[in-house]
Amino acid sequence: MAQKLEDFPVYRKAQEFQVAVNAIIDRPAWGRNRKLREQIAEATESVLANMEEGYEQSTDAGLAKYLYTSKGSAAEAVGRLRSGARRRWLTQQELAQCAKMGEEIQRMLGGWIKYLARCDWKDRGRHLGGFTD
Image 1 (cartoon, rainbow, N blue to C red):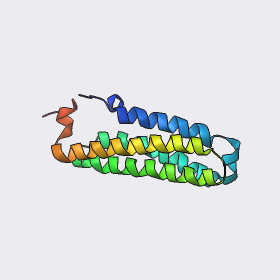
Image 2: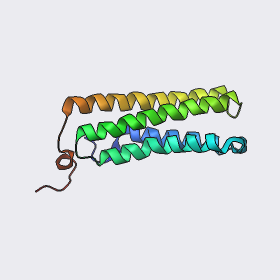
Image 3: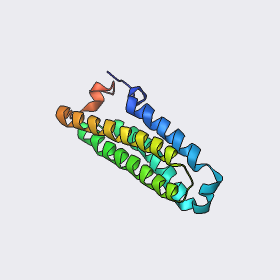
Image 4: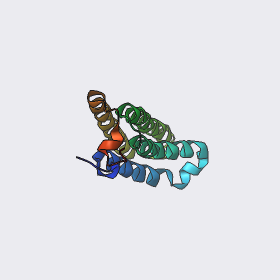
């Protein structure tokens, strides 16, 4: 059983996704539309940040709320990359690779959310090695 967020495969895949996307949006062409570049960067950061914040919640329902946001941010990043592809700032192959990564993260997060709904722990802190009274 995973004890730290970093132990979850979906978290590692989200990190890889962020690195791959950042390598694309760091190209000079993306400077033409700084707002789009920043939106994509923020969306990929949001995937990780919401997993991190959610993992610290005391209930499974609390964690699931943040995972839904992470899932949406992954979809947003891919959608905005499609906009960049229409401008020819990345190739169709690069877009397909990022879309595949983003969709895999979304599926994994969806599975985790379903698992949490079945478990529905009310005090995750006790199971994560947190403080107990």
